[in-house]
Amino acid sequence: MSKVFTGIEVIRRENVKKLMSDSGIKRQELSDGAGINYALLGHYIGKNPTKAIGDEIAEKIERYFDKPPNWLDHEHDTPEGIANDIRQNNAVKVASNPKGLLEIPIYSVYFCCGNGNGECEFEEIKGTRSFHPSFFTEKKIDPNEFKLVCAANGSMSPYINDGDEVALI
Image (tube, rainbow, N blue to C red):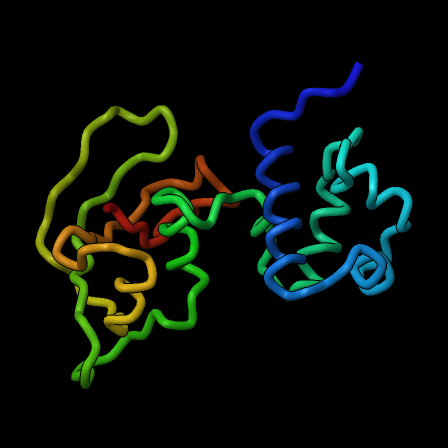
């Protein structure tokens, strides 16, 4: 009987397969470059996987593909993944007078990421982040529907930390 994978197990495996496909990397190259036994790698990402990718293997793969910690843990082609990509994307720029960039306001709305009181504190705009218009085009996002807010507390760490700017779409 084969193992049924769910949640992060599936996300990690699919992200590894997509990274390999996008970069043209074969399993042997990943095995050699990341220092993961070739046969064991087959158990993680082969046709009929029998093992879930654990934290140690995920870290090796992320280092090999030059991705930040916990990158494999998130979907990247979904609205949920877009918020994470924004935090890690070099297209995000802070500029006082950008040319050709779209300024996105950062609202002073702090929200609890855990089991907080369920209320948001709304305040004025505290600043802006500038994005190249291609960022929105590539992600198929209407910039008028894109908002940035700040997280309060670290209950979602390491994914969302206290003070992180989070995109709402």
